[in-house]
Length: 101
Image 1 (cartoon, rainbow, N blue to C red):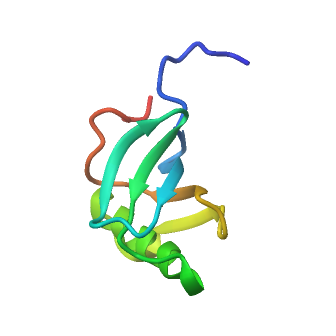
Image 2: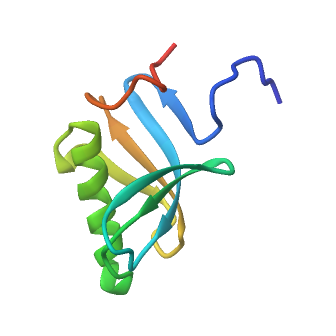
């Protein structure tokens, strides 16, 4: 594997879309993006994982964080797992450490 770029391993750009590998903790006291945990970005959610509530809440939290409408954040992998991958189309905010190259 080519490790030429020293970027963290939890994200990648594809055109204007940002793909993020997440580790999600539910039943937290509040919503919070904790930081990098291994090769994933750890996110705490106050929602429960019942009936897709946590997935919907995750999309709302990440849309707000990256300054995009709800419909520009998509859950790609991990619908029933703590390890998830999302895609944020054309994120507008909170990008100083993950600018596309």
